[in-house]
Length: 192
Image (tube, rainbow, N blue to C red; front, top):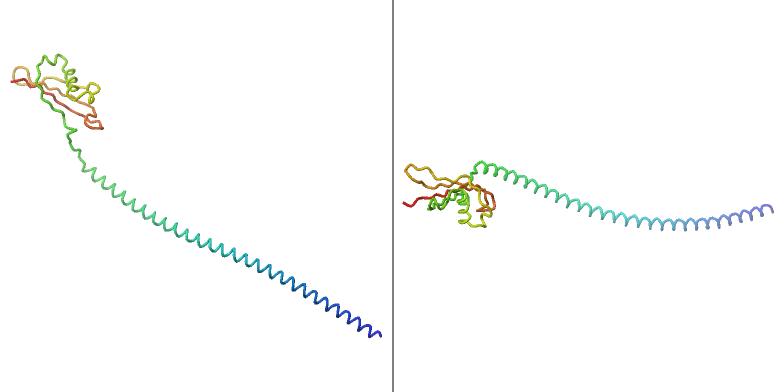
């Protein structure tokens, strides 16, 4: 009896362990399946993130390559500009050494021969020449009276009154916008 009872107890224990084993196996299988699903979802998310990062890195690499090309082109352009600048400097130095100012019609002295009596000009030769210049060239070219350095008769070797030589020095923009020095001679030749 005791052996039968032990056998029943053992059978009961075996059934209990069998049920427990099935229940634990089911729970482990369910937990494993849940973990596998979560791990698969996480792996898929991680793969998508890695693919996106890889795509962004490829784009960044492409942009860096483009920037390097542009920098290389700009460096080449800068070198070219430096060479051109040096060439221009050399040309300017050689041309400035050989440069000589040219005389133009604007730089030429104003020379006029006039016939007038001594009494026409009066005692103030300088004032007469100032008025004469304004009359000849117009008020718009001489808004104020031009400064006259000196006006006198030229020395002659013959007797009598000689040629009236009037020499002036003008600072005027009479011919162009630059200020130029102008010399002029107005000569009064007596009627012969």
